[in-house]
Length: 271
Image 1 (tube, rainbow, N blue to C red):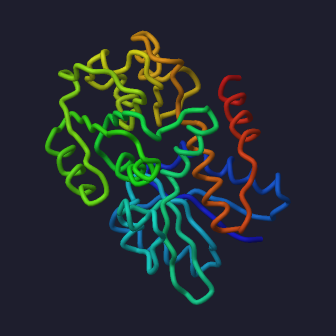
Image 2: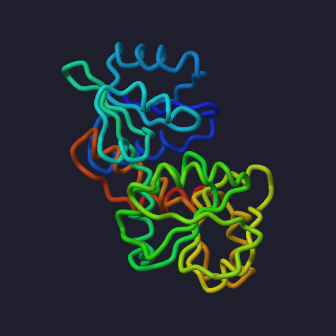
């Protein structure tokens, strides 16, 4: 039985073991998948011990995607572009391969919901690790323009500058936005603080709206979007499953079908 895991802190809430167990059942792969908790000081030690004990791959969640990048011996194209890793693989030659599947997971879920990026104006709310990890994939889809807004303006400007070699990104204070967008994506963790980002409702009117957060009910950002005239807003269950499917494909060489897994997770949290 091949061993896999997800590492983070906190990690108790993670749906990754359930998702990968469903993938394994679907494809007849005999795998185990556990949760690992660490601190910034123990991350490398926990990883080394897991791989020494026969572990084949690890999903990496907050707050360790930067540490996973540094831990990797070989980096995939997406990881190089965004400077973060959410998927680690241990190869037979002893090297650790790191890749980021977050951006591809988002793009696949948008495609599954008939939402395109090409030629459209995109507003990204938040300038943290999630935005950093999905920006290369969004840029690859050739949007008309991209605007970043963040509570801390300097953080948005720093992220903009990091991607200047790939795309001309604008920054704007959320409250002063006076135009609408074709697609608005929320990457902030405002859901955890029971708030919505400070963004002018003008931005969302008529837009496709996507919240990377997920919940057993409407997220606060979803509700805010719908109340302010967006198209029916989506949340991140699909992205969660799609990025996991790409990790599974990296490890196992085959990509599982995702639709049934998304529906299974949603039905379980609704009931």
